[in-house]
Length: 88
Image (tube, rainbow, N blue to C red; front, side):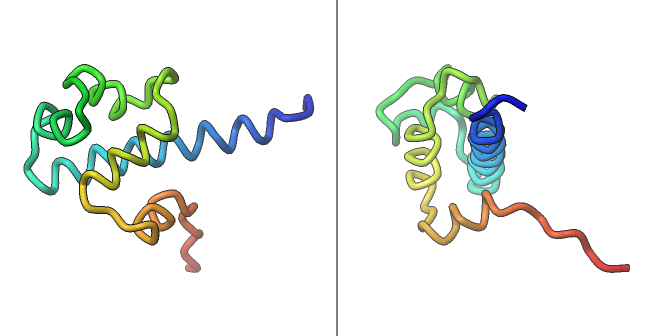
């Protein structure tokens, strides 16, 4: 494994988890992508990229989107925590 690839994998995984949490939270709140875009001073197409985990989306924008949806730092931590296996 080349050096840094574990770091890159962790970043990609974190961005995927944040992206999914943005989509889920927006849907739970009954907001459209356009409404979230207005909160972010962005565009609907950019929000679509956020929710699709497009590689061009920065971690900063993912975090801003979660906070625009009312998340706290603790909520963000919970969103990116790996699920633990359930004992049988």
